[in-house]
Length: 173
Image 1 (cartoon, rainbow, N blue to C red):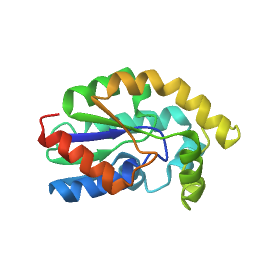
Image 2: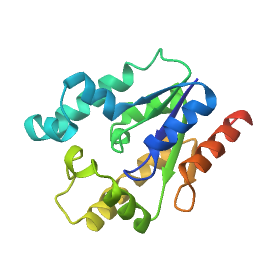
Image 3: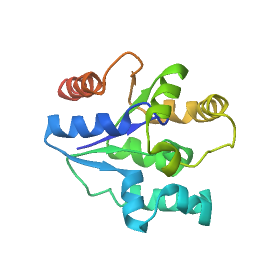
């Protein structure tokens, strides 16, 4: 079984995935970290050098390479849902949980993440709140059509979210 966590930056995908993998005894995979390890550079460096299209190609290659992986909790990059083939792969190859949070929470979490600015390039060049609003609006239909389940993480800790997901899995989805 593969469990995919999708959603915008700051929703808690990576932290929740680590905790959930421990609860389930599954392996933990972060697609962004996997790509960075594969190329030996940060996503920001890759995008600055080769552009977003190159990153999206690598992201899809990494995702499709997980086809035969079993018993894993996978935290995906926020934009993985932009490609229709990725959305189909996610839905057909695992249980997909979309994590979301309100604007204030996203701004707070992203601002508190010391590695966020250095490793994640701006998507729009706009101020953080404007970027979050624009990108979330663009991706909303893709997140909705990809996810089997949605969990609002605004008022919940990653531990609480991991337990909610575990219970849903144990109850058959």
